[in-house]
Length: 321
Image 1: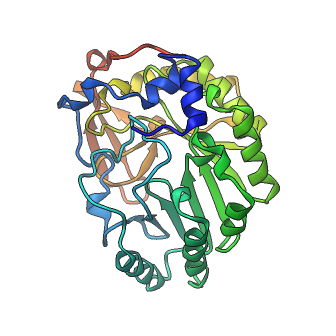
Image 2: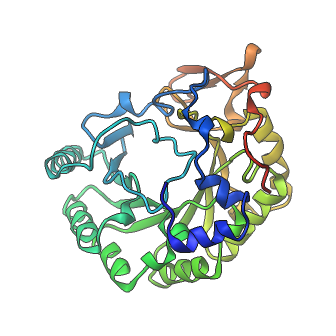
């Protein structure tokens, strides 16, 4: 458990509320569940080297750290197992792998949270990517502006300018997280010319109400952040209390089409457990027995998986909307 002071103050202002729920450990996390998946998005089978994932030929995911400013109880990598920070030799090998593959045109930095790296280390890493001619863009996924807005400094902005054109993807899950300090941090990033996207997670007991989702996406849009993805929760060991069925998610999300302008409406996606990547929930075909099928329109290959039943989705904590 880890709480930056501003985020802890936000939780303390509403005990049992959405921020509290996202960070407070529960005894139920230690209980095994039949729906748990040790590798819920299939990264293991798409990892050519340690800390490197490649699900699509034109982009690569580089896991640059295991550290975060805050440990989300619903994190899909929480069951990744023991292991320390990436070693310098491992990152060098991953960079060499990328450099040898001209098809890779974008590198996505994740972890952990890349913005836990020192400015100097982040600038060095981005500078190395800038030396690879075929890497055109970098995407950086972070919760830092939400959990720890003080992290957005002039030094950080300068570090982010050292690499290829960067897109910053923040992760906000509830409108209460968008405090004046967070808004100011996002404003500093925008003033520096960084395009901002958001990906949120649909979480039972946190934001599982259409009105809450609408308020979140409107607030982000107003702050100059484009809602990009709304993720269906992945089934990592220990996050059972945050899960909800796909059918429930669709009932919550569909009304947003008539309530939000197009740029404020994210894509509702599920990351398939076989490693195929993110697909829109609307593209799934429901089958019997709680199963769903996705068919790749390019290859015709199909993936079938089982959703959690409605009865298994009862929350273990308060409903906070």
